[in-house]
Amino acid sequence: MRRLVMVLMGFWIVLFASGCGGGGSTYSEQKTTENSEQTSTSSTGTWTTAAKNEFVLRRMREWYLWYDQIPASLNADDYASPEAVLEAARYTARDRWSYIESAQTVTAHLSTGEFTGIGIRTSQDAEARLWISQVFPGSPAEAANIVRGDQILRINGRTIAEINAENGWDTAFGEDAAGTPVTLVIRHQDTTQTSYSLLKDTFIVDAVSATKVLQQGSVKIAYLAYDTFTSSSRSSLNQAFETFKNAGVTEMVLDLRYNSGGYIDIAAYLASLVRDASDKETFATIRYNQNHSDSNYSLTYTRLSTDLNLSRVFVITAKGTCSASEMVIQGLKPYVTVVTVGSTTCGKPVGMDLVSFDDQVLAAISFEIANANGEAEYYDGIAPTCPANDDLTNPLGESTESSLATALAILSQGSCPTTTQRRLPPKILTLWPRKHPDQGYDGMW
Image (cartoon, rainbow, N blue to C red; front, side, top):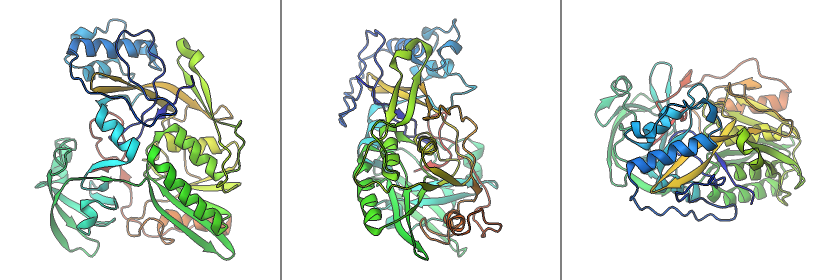
């Protein structure tokens, strides 16, 4: 049976994949299968810590991509939790992504797009200022009229400097549960300040966050901002591409600046919507460690009636463009011209199978990814063809927004523009990740 796997998503939610065989484990390993979007993740909470620790170490020694880097002397009984075992076994020179999480947390977002929070994405700049880069529709933040480009000064009474000094981002916004109160002090772009008292809620995030048909002269251009490779986003993608095709677009700007990963089969599906592909053409090759090379397989393109049959695509990237997003860029390169605009991507040419144990899941790096040309190991990220920064003074999809404006300038001029617009903030840095050692380059709250 071909294994469906997914690549890790940046930030707190990660990918999910069908497991790659249990390697003779005597423990129960619940996995998804390629044709099922229902995940068997019954929570028993009956395992002892010792049993969990042993499971994690045994699984790592067998399936971990860098299994030969795990110290031979490492003993699961020496650690207080399975998370501690994973951290001790993790190959820190390469692996920023392996993690353990509750089954419920991992499956909810990737299956349905469900998210619990106030509904904002944040980024920190070089001066440690915290900006709101995205507000999700249907969220408490949207209801409060908080917008992209607002600056957060205080969170639950603490300044951003105080949270940074305490490395306190894991708890800065409080418990991840509906009804949790969050207080914010925000400075707007007109320099006025407002205090907000919000309650976290559970809502659905549509991974297709913005679509437009733009026009330059006689050329029609599709614009698609896409946030996460979730199984629930397939219908939104279909609808968007059907609209693009009916409009007669001949160029496309694919905005993946905030997309840190997800299901790799959805990555292949998105790439198939971009070009006219044969079902037998390789999108990517999945390669396991040398002890499981018989599990290697190729993920292929799908011929789709709504594909745009493009020979070129412009992709907006940022440091948060990770995993399955990078896979799309790499997977398209052997077949079409890919022009990247923005900043260098995160550099994650690997992924994981996700295996459940008790009421948790282990997502440890278990395979590497190569495109049809055999290109892999882009740990330093994918550099942009033309640099551009995220312009928080304009909404996503606005032709005056710096990254999109740069893509449109290349399209009309045939080269990178020599001047750029004012951008806010001048440089985005990583925000401390929540819960996992990877993960991501922004906060989703």
